[in-house]
Image (cartoon, rainbow, N blue to C red):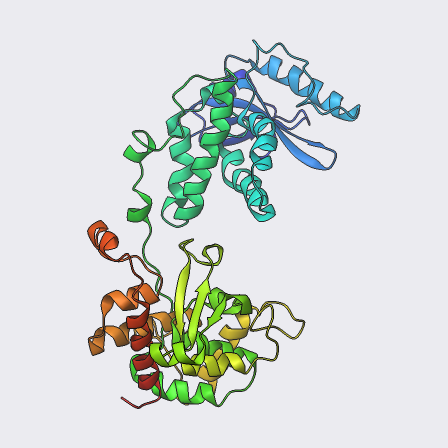
Length: 410
């Protein structure tokens, strides 16, 4: 809201949800939440960074007191002092805001993370979604209602983000509870708390199917792909033959390939095994893929025999766009194009996995072998326990039939 001179009469009126700024020029404002609670907050810049300070709830902290504290904070900033670090108020008078607790808790939390991307996401998620709603609110006044209000708008549209946000808020508030700044239970916990107000992740997430190549177009598309040159075309052919994810193909390394000697190859009917390590798999489990002759021939086309099998011109991992752009060009060059039957959108690399699965279903192939090839879980817990083997010989036969189908031989 535009800044105006706040008065006690105005503050006691029936204000709508939002932030109402005082015209004192200190960044002081009253934050009115959907629950009707009112809390003082202050937005102020220090060393080029915007801070949000919680100054207590209204009317516990009256207007005059809030102005005095805000003026003190601004004075500290002009002196080069961070107001969040300066213990200028008796702790018994003011409970730290969520924003202040977050800044205190984050160093230890981030130290436990090894991935720089995850560290950045931790802070950005809280700054984007939590701080605008509860950043200036004293932690001891945050209830399940405030957490529910900030999660509800994004729970269905951005379920994964919302779920991570909830967990991160819970971690920050656990820090406040241990420090004795608020009482248990934690209002951001899921079980027996938010689980009663929000649908589970599984219920909230609607499956998103990426555009798939129609089975009736598969042989024509495959024939055209074989006419294409370049490392991207070779990688896309291997992706198709193995029904792999793009990242699994692009990250393929020579040391992952365990090739058989001639005698073993003759006995097995395939040339070796591609062992994909757990850290490169979506399910974080090692996955084995039989290397058939058509696959071996594709791999043998690459120049080096060390490091990445498929390299960009600069010697780095191929971009995901390399394969996607190739499929777009193939779509554009065909009179009718290669489109998904349901959405009408051009087929994409990941959709080729659905094409493979459709072929399995329509031709009566082994569902179990197909799901294992796709590195999917399937069936009940009893089935999982039963399939201690990965059926690699059966999958070699399945992939051989898939290749023959693409070639128009069956």
